[in-house]
Length: 110
Image 1 (cartoon, rainbow, N blue to C red):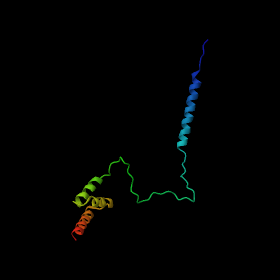
Image 2 (cartoon, helix red, strand yellow):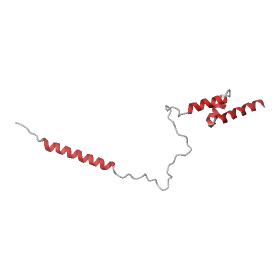
Image 3 (cartoon, rainbow, N blue to C red):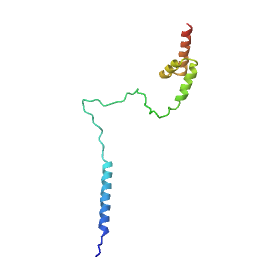
Image 4 (cartoon, one colour):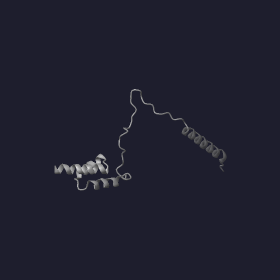
């Protein structure tokens, strides 16, 4: 007793099914996507334009950040750590940091 299988219709069916699945996938990818619609009584969420960009904890400092900190620290000289941190937090330039240091020194002598 011998069993014979005709592989041509099986293989042809698999190829047709695979082609139909591929065509359906391509049609699904090319579908037009509608924008998200918000309910009329809710405001669309926005990001504050002046919000500082958030860095992840393991991301390195942006270009020039370390040089800026060194520059401000050198400009403030022997100022207290608190005044240096205040200058850094306020984003002062080198000249502004020097003026803050001069004002601090003048306040001590007066």
